[in-house]
Structure formats: C-alpha cells, structure tokens
Image (cartoon, rainbow over all chains, first blue to last red; front, top):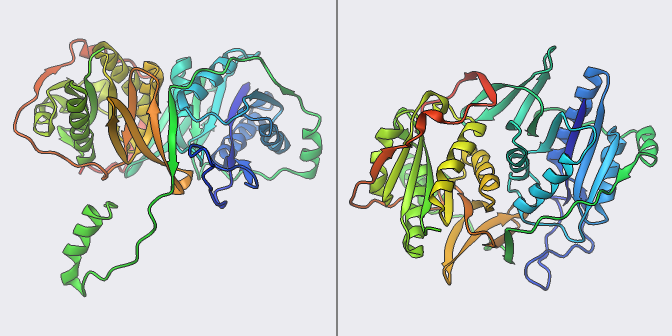
Length: 253
Length: 199
C-alpha cells in the first residue's frame, strides 16, 4: 500500500505577520515556520494505516522553497519513509497551480498512490482547496474533513466527517483522496531514533513543471483595528437589539 | 465566453438556506456589472420548486437538478454535475456560499473548470471589468486582494457578509436537460446521523 501525504510548511500561527515592502507578500525573515498542523493528522493517519496493514510505504510530498526540505524531514522523523520535494523559490499562493503541480507529481510516482491524504486546510492560505482540487484533477473519489478513518478487511475505507449539525459515514474505495480534520487522531511526536533515521531517508526532487498561477494576491493589508465593546442595554429587553446588532453589524449570526 | 455568473444553491425539500440567497444576490450584482446574467443552479430535493423563487433574488434563469443522486450532498457528484452545467454556459464566475458544503464543492468545481479560486471571500468587486476578491488569510491577521488570470473565477462567499437582495421578478426556470444523468457517486453514504432540517 502506497500512501502519499501532501504537506506544507507554514508560518507558526502564534507568530506576528508583517506585510513586506512589496505589499503583496509577508516578511519571512525571523518568522517561525512549522509543519501545517492539519497535515500532522494526515501523516499520523497514514502511519496508522501502514501499521495496520503491516506493509507499505508512506511518501510525504511538498511544494515549496528550499527550506521546505526541513518540513519533509520532520514528517520523515515521525515515521514516513520517503520524501518528495517540488522546489519553487517562493511559496505559490494560487490553489490551482499548487494542485495541478502536485497532481502531476503524484501521477509520476512509482508505485502509483493507493491513497492520498492531505490536511483539510493550510493555516496560512486557508483555502481548503488543494486536497479536493488534486482529487478532481486526478478523478479520485474525495472525502474532506475526515474525523474518523477505518480500513475494512476487504480494503475499503470507512470514513466519518462532520457536517452542519451531524456527521456522515461514507465508504470509499481506494485509490482515493481524503482530507483530515482535527479530532481524527493524536499525531505522534518524532522520537530521537526517528529523527536520526530521518537523516538517512531519501528526499527526491523530481523535475515537475510548476503550473502557471490562475490567481494572484494583488495586495495584502491589515484587518481593521478591533473596536471597543458596547453596552446594548440591560436584561431581557436588550436581547432583540443585541441579536439584531450581532446579525447586521457584527455579522456573526 | 458569456458574461454570465453562475450561483450555486443547495435545496433540501424545496427549502434553501439564507446564505445561498446571498450567493444568488451577489451573483446577480456581479453579473449586472459584467453585462451578463445570473444563472442560479439549484441542486437537491425540491430543487424545481426552489428554483422558481431565485428570480426574486436577481437570477435571470434557474436550472434545477432534482433527483435521488443529489438529494444528499456528495462532493464527487455535486462537483462533476455543477462543473458540467457551468462549463456549458462558459461563465465569468461561479459563486457559492462558503458553507461546509460550499467549501467542499467550490475547489472541485474550480479544478474542473481550470479556474482561479478565492475561498471565503468577504468582498467582491469589479475593477476595470476584472473581478477582485477580498479574503482573510493568516488566521485573519491579514486581508488579501485576489485577482484572476483565468477566464472564469470561482468564489466562495463567507456567510453573512453579503446582502440578500429582494427584487421583483421570476427566474425562467427549467430542469437540467440531462438531469437524470447526474454523475454517479464514487463514495457511498452509508448513514447520516442527526442532520437537522435546513433553516
């Protein structure tokens, strides 16, 4: 069983974002980068499936700058077998170009992928797009936001996903693509042994053309400053006005 | 290429969530600016009935897909079906509400249409005839303005950020001509728990 996990190097969500002088990108100097948290669930799921089957390969793949090799190493340290680095000097921002490039690289893998896993979203671009886009480009069945995953004896996958107000149970026949959500598992920490072993694991750099971007960030700006609180009224009488303001002004309902 | 805008609407027993109407209203506003029309594509149970109401929110036309394969949301089925309908009309944009289903569906449609995609938009405008979307990035620590290189753009709209317009009129509604062929599911739903009725 060959499981491919798509991963991304992202700025730590706790870090302060500074818009660069070009007005379109962020300042990366001094920024702390991590493996996208949602991708950790995907890696863990892949490792668990491999352990359950008792055989197979877990390949982690990323598209990004030279520094993204470090992100691949963290995944290899968790237990993945093989890394694939599609190098591009800048982090691409267009979901289609990213998905198209990854899809081409997945098609070129030997042995072919039986299952592709990806985090539901990257915490920086938060488009929730690359997983389902790759699946559509490769004509793979796709279930997003998976919170439970079980392999059945005959090889089908029983997956659960949260939907508005409930959850769905689906059966998926590999090859397929799943995106992983919080709650699916507890990602393991890399052991010292794993970290040492990761240094010897192969990272391939196949020559895959970077697909042209179909969208571009024209400008970045800071969100409007948070406004102070406001007392709407007192007691039950204030509720209708509060609901109206939450709905119409704050737009949170 | 037409200057039309496709707005996706999900129906359940003929009912439509308000956020879908935001997509139709914004689709109509965008279409008017582009010199085209807004076509609502309504999928789900009771779609035909719901489709007739889309004119009130600015849709010039509505296409209904109502058959068992689309009665429950399935991303694979919805993605292929909506992309097929959209491709036939060669629109400038496809807009959806960024509900859980919309966020799952939009990238699938964008991939099939080879379209630039902006997710969870909080604003959409036309600048010299070109679509520009605003969307939060970096967990809301920055707002990005996104432009498109592709002939068609796919936009998912953050719920409750766009007005629902009420206008006079009725959309010319028709069932999707090849409706019974809605693409077969590649994953099968084996159960569903606790789904509430649509609001």
